[in-house]
Image 1 (cartoon, rainbow over the protein chains, first blue to last red):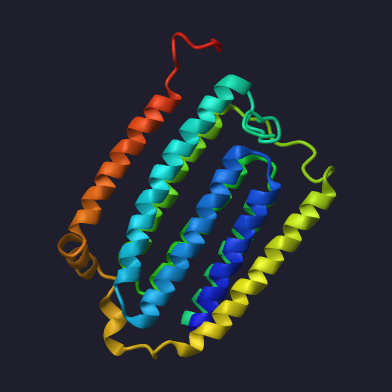
Image 2 (cartoon, chains in turn red, green; image 1 turned 60 degrees about the vertical axis):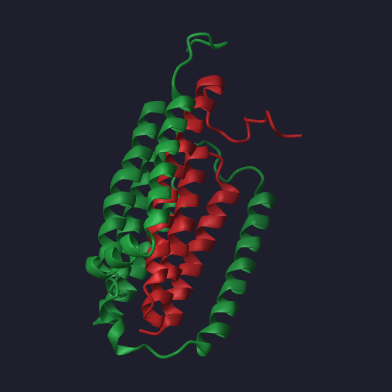
Length: 99
Length: 172
């Protein structure tokens, strides 16, 4: 397979994640779309690493995975805290920091 | 054979991603994301990154998605009503922006891949546990330990954020 196909698939997945972040109103789904985008970037790193024969791309993916795990834990804790105050995770109803 | 598996996994992952952002039920979204992550793990296998494929299934599709599903079922959310009925202009603008970004990415990819060197034959075993662990625990031992600190801080921070305060303004 050509490298272009892998990079193109990664770009498509990233764009689907962007559409999800921009259109959905549920904060949990927005976090999941962020995970989707992180995963698309991981795919780019792995395909370029395989193409160049260089292991450092896969090392970066390893660290990206652990950062994604930390981000999911903290983000879900924030969502639980918001839900306790507002009884909703709809981001159109959460306007404390909005003008 | 590789082409067949690539298109199988690529179609599966794109279909699961689209189904994830269009399904109304949050639990269905999470399950479609699991399908997407497993498909991407298959593509990692095609790229001879065996260790990362296993870690992807274990950490992403296993641990992180169980966390998401646990929170979704804990909060007992209703599915979103009026998903596409209002703010059609907003959705149109979001779609146009995303398509623009996709075309930009594809343009950059198509422009840059000609400058890469051809695949070297010794790159077939860079994704094994042995090679990755060798680099990870010799060259990158300090970042690995920093990751441990980061994960500890994240767990403590998540506990601090999510615990119920007795003197809070709202008991619910």
